[in-house]
Image 1 (spheres, rainbow, N blue to C red):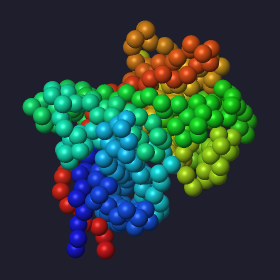
Image 2: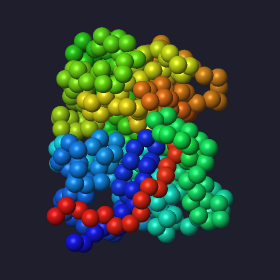
Image 3: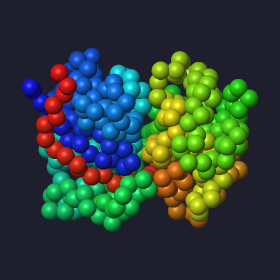
Image 4: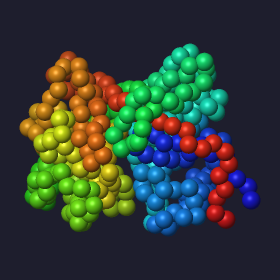
Length: 351
């Protein structure tokens, strides 16, 4: 049986298989079929593959040399289904992004740059550029460190992720409906795209507090799906019934010392945490005067990150606006994550 070179990595609060593009078929159909067999999809347990039986562990990062002069590598993200044989490129993943720079150094695409290395990454799914900075003492990637992130046991080396040009990454506009606030099926929402299309609504409008354990929110799936399908049309995304975007995030006042409490659905299942770019888009929305949930946000002192509470802990996000034109534009977004190499070798797909 012919295997495929693969590195399994944890990136942020996700886990995925990282590949060089040259190690996979060039034809997208052949590539996707191979990846489904590698991951063990379709099967709710993914027992015959390397998937972890959850959407957050059924992910793929494909990294290639840069296709242009403004970056160091190109990164294509693919979300694979678990129960269903689906492969989607309609979104990117900021969590797996946390391991892309290190993978590029490990595979020799980018040389280590001293004690710390900075890699400019094109997010192929959206066209945005992200800058990843991480530890490389002695010219080797060092995954060990003291930064703890919610949802991940232990500590690891920090990875600084700076995002620019993420505004309207999928829809073409920061406010894809043209409004800061919309009414969808009797629910007030704010639809924002700053790296990830997100529909923000108040938890109270769904009859919940926003502090429930994740498993208690599964019954909201049909209502969340109805909301996001209608919102998807308003956002110019067409029929999103078979897509994982837009994401839906319910917000409530913070209760654990953070800035806002969140419950995110991907696309209709409650998420155990919150995605990196999903968190960035939610914070962007909440910072806009008049947006749904704006009144619930507790702003930290100037210069400190906005701590987003989620079921597994918190995510620190920084969003800077450029207001020189009179209309708020996103200048820069920053988050800190960690990543760790779990396995490097050959993976053998189901025949």
